[in-house]
Each structure stands twice: as structure tokens, then as C-alpha cells.
Image (cartoon, rainbow, N blue to C red; front, side, top):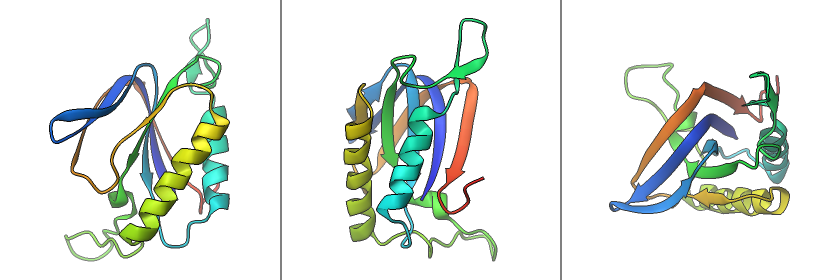
Length: 150
């Protein structure tokens, strides 16, 4: 499971020109799911995300978690995070989970966040053509992969 986290002052996602999810200050999570992902991967990532100290304290030092700043989360599925560009010029998505499995994992990831995070959690629509708008704060952008726990 791979995520791109972006610290935002605001973010939204539209489907068919209608906003389906939006947040204020918080984290936009772009979530890529592969066939080998499990609930253990989800739990590890969620724990890391909600405890990651990427928000500024009173001294301007990134020392606070999303919980400590009463931030919000916007979750958006993005299978292209598993693109392989090793050969040729057309990305291969062979490692990305098939849609049925990915949809189950995406919804489970969302449910797990809801149980572990007390503020607003909004989300996109799995498999839809989504338009994501954000104001990246910092900018702070972090990539994490549950198969490469650095």
C-alpha cells in the first residue's frame, strides 16, 4: 500500500462537477493499493499518518500531529501510485490491485481511519473520474509505502 500525503490548508474532490468531499486544514491522502496489501498494511499506515508530526507548533517547528491541530483528512484512491515506468514510455499498472479488491481495501481503509481518528474524514468516489483541488501547505508532501517501512 502506497500513499502520498499532502499537508493542506484546504482540499476538495469533485465527481461530475459536484464536490463529493472537502476539508479545511489537514492531510490529503492519495491511496494506491496493490494485490499483496493486507489489513496489517492499512493499520501500519493509518497509525503512521495520524501520529506523523508534520504540523507546526507555536515556534514554527513541525512537531504536531493531525490530532493535535484538530486537522481533517481527505482520502482519495489513486491506482497510478503503483505505476511502473521501468520499460518503455507507457506506465504499467501490473502491481495495482484489481478493481474489486482495491475497492474493498479502499473502503476498509476508510472505515479503519474513522475508528482511529476523531475529526472529519472525507473521501472521493472509488473508480470515478475525480478532480482534486488542494492548497499544499508548506509545501509538505510525504510518500510512504507499507512494503518499504523506512
